[in-house]
Amino acid sequence: MPELDFSGLGQAAQAAFRPHFAEVERRARRRRRRTRMAGAAALVAVVAVGAGTVWRAMPSDDGGDRYGTLGPPVALDRTPDFVPTPAPSATPGVTTPPPPTVTGTMLAGDLRRLYLRYRDCQGENCAIRLATSADGGASWQSYPLPVPDNSLVGLRVVGPRTLVAEVQTSPKRDDGMIEGDGVEQQFWLASSDGGVTWREIQITEVAAVPETYRPVEWIPDSDGLTVLAADPATGEVVRLATKAPLHHARVIEGGTAAAGLWVSGWTDRTIGPVLEPNGTISENKATFNGSAIQVSWDGGRNWRQSVLPEDVEAGGNAGAAALAIGDRAAYAVGQVEGELRVYRSVDQGRTWRRTAARAQVGDRMIHAAVRPDGVLVIQAGILAGENPIMFEGLDQGERLREIPVGPGASAVPVPGGYVQSGNQDSSGGWLSPDGITWSYVGPPTIER
Image 1 (cartoon, rainbow, N blue to C red):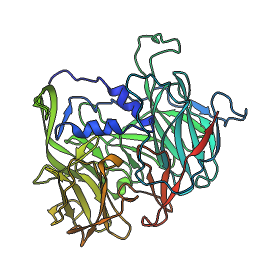
Image 2: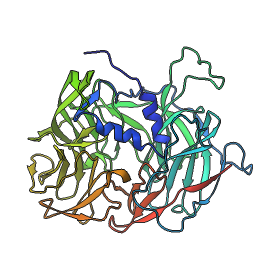
Image 3: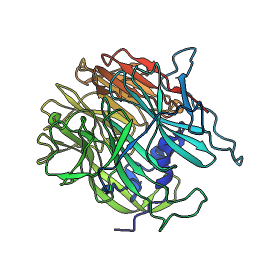
């Protein structure tokens, strides 16, 4: 196997903090279909050491020190477009100082408990903070996360007041010198009180994921995918001992292990030179084939695999089919040569049948979900420049009806309803009690 190429990994991870990283997604989708640089998605999850340390994060009360304070939600004269038009890009060749605050994606534990990780910067040094709301965004509090400045923090909400964070520290000191041997440190934190106190945790390896644990989506290491899951009560994280034999796969979030572990990925991977659309040849690229779905109903002890007859691709980090899981039917959705495909399973993922649904979607990234009323919702395209389109699947996905673009295709169930994060150009979120009617929640005003 050729040597793995990790160049650009840090930059890609930093994009999670940027309010405008449309270009990152656009470049990803323009790569040759089903190809990726070998190792490009290989962020290795390292087991944390030294469990048991506890930090208490106190809200700022000094009236606007360098860490910043939170004001009321951002004032809006109207509900913003679901897919907003991004601000103009910086002028080429002109150096623009980084903004003092850079926000991430709004997450939700339920319809009232909201979380927003952000960076509060002084020059190139950025403190990592957490904004929290317990009243649906009407008011906010700010807490410093107990991590070194400039750390990368992958935040997940696994319960109303339970959060876990994958942390990667920067090896550089404030003066630009390298700390120690220059090795980045990776560890995990958990909070069970809404982000007020945190403790460092170790990942426990298990033969089967406990029924009440929730799968955590993460970028797998170069050797393949295993399942990470977190306890929604305590935030303890476990890792499945056996790996799913699919390449470039992802685990579907949103339910518990008792509701089934669903994985979408590829059966085959080859590494070698690839002819790009512009006529150049890229060396050591990974090409994936064999769109497949795996399902486990016993916490990952046993898996049932189904390989679709076509290489269905949804784009994004994993690329394989997007899975939408409902109570009566499950769907695998993606495109083949620019034409939308919908596969349906009515036997808990044992068999899949292609429906008659068709639509031209090009190479747009595809998201799909099943509404509480059983209707399949598909969104193709996530950026304003792509002219996104959205469909409802009629007759269990046999026909498609185009509908106005809005929330629903990436909805996540939470206690009391559903939540959907804003897109790349928004730090707001969308809430719904029924998965059909949605309201917008804006981020707080971050004052200095």
